[in-house]
Image 1 (cartoon, one colour):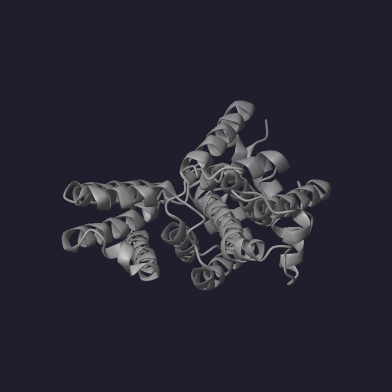
Image 2 (cartoon, one colour):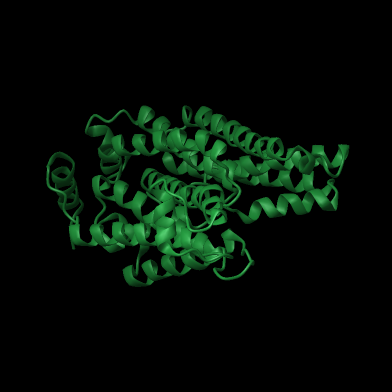
Length: 366
């Protein structure tokens, strides 16, 4: 059994060295090839099947054999696939940041109440629409979608600011974790009260939003979403060494010269931006954030974040794309709730990790 001193020495080598133990090039190449394959398949199949050669023709700027196929790919399936890639990567990285920061294998992007804050913002819009007219949001169309997205972002932002204000006054990450859970309970209670006084039509609209979906995001919304998510993912790369130091505890990280207060603010801010943006545009999507980091640690048997960060982006995008493909039920007009699909994928993955590791905390010691 490795002693803590052994673990510290090993981590020092990982932090300061240039080798990347645990990196498996062939497996990475296989995952990239699988991601490209699933991406093309997601554009080809659906309620209308489109030959793969026509999909490729559209992607390189040519017309498909039928004009309708070009429209289907460019206006519906491609935005949905790109949204799934961004959402999976963002939620996976958010989960990785939270699990490492709190040293808790059950932490995920919504543990600080960010998702509940977004839900509160949407519920407020729903209640206001219900008190004025039952068709207000439907009549607003695109502006209604933007209104929901803005409300969700505002709710997430307010909760994020409260968490950041609290983070300056507590020294323990575990205390901040507990406070985040309490913020989540408070916002959930407010949502319950708002919905209790709302009308049935608006409650149904809110419930539909909570199902989660990648299909409602348009190109104009992606114009906002893409730069924000890419900025958050870029920040996570710069946090790799900080996360490696935090693996051994805040006391050891402090002894290495790490500015804990600044690291805490940057990690929370990055997580809030990534998870809050995805929740605003796609609804609350569970289990990707908690399952993907565990899958990556198990597949590559490493806790080095120089490897985990890019792999989590890759695997997160792959898992979200597969979930989106399954939710659309190819060959039919049925669309399953995305949250149900991600739970069916994520829960068995976490159970497998727990059973294979015996003690899930071992995933932080590889």
